[in-house]
Amino acid sequence: MPIVVGSCLPLSLVQFAEVANEAFSDYLIPAPMTAAGVARRNRTETIDMNASRMAFDDEKAVGFAQIAIRGDRCRLAGMGVIPEYRRKGVARLLLETTVREARDAGFREMVLEVFFQNERARLLYEDFGFKKMQKLPGAQSGPLEPESGPIREIAFGEYSQKLRDWAGRLPWQLAPESVDVLDKPAIAYATEEAALLVARSLPDKIISYGLVVDPAKRRQGHARAILRRVQAIHPGLGWFFPQLMPESMEPMFAALGFEPLPLFQWEMALQLA
Image 1 (cartoon, rainbow, N blue to C red):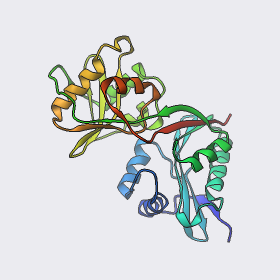
Image 2 (image 1 turned 30 degrees about the vertical axis):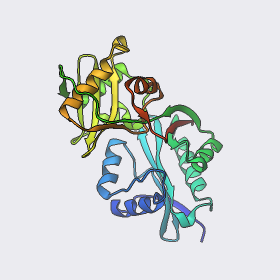
Image 3 (image 1 turned 180 degrees about the horizontal axis):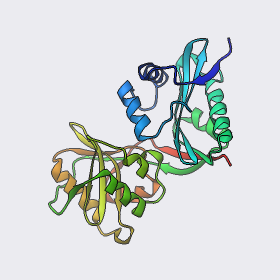
Image 4 (image 1 turned 90 degrees about the vertical axis):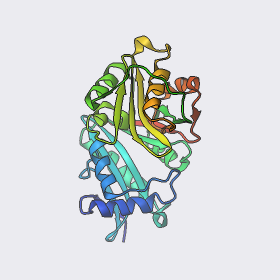
């Protein structure tokens, strides 16, 4: 039977996670999913399971494309095909379907992120007309020298407002709309001049999803100061910024002595209207 593309809604979150885990079993970066993790991503990234699509071979789910929606923009939030069905046109069929449906629904733009090193996927997106918008690097460091000084924990709404006031173009996952719906264990901190979002702390590192400085006060050491003051709250932990950071942050990471991650992503966009 031919591959048929249909809705993701017949699948439970557990079943969807199982398909995604099989599709990503050999991904560049391990990304195991659980039903709770799928639900959390759906909420924070505004993924619409009704607009998302699943590829079926008879009744077997063999690939998926997740679609997130905000206003007149949408995002391909994830796409994967289980190994035994690759190189059979399933990914192309999923992309054709989601792009066509997004255009028919009146969306202005579709965005996505893809690892530069994932050449097969990147070339597929380019073949459909997606253009590179910005590089999304990551960075890491060992523990920094802690320092004392004024710092406070702030509400996620206050952090997202600072993003609106101070930041430029941000990838979907770091945008104010994603921050607005965060909950613990994430924590946001601020000084008068800067703000930092800690997604969570692991036994050996702090995972941060953003650092923003008042544009009028940049290049004055405020990024270094907030990092060191947060370090004093989480002593002995290293730092990890995933491959979602805006390209404009690369000079800051270099100045702070952070090591670039070996893999990086491109944010890409397709104009639909």
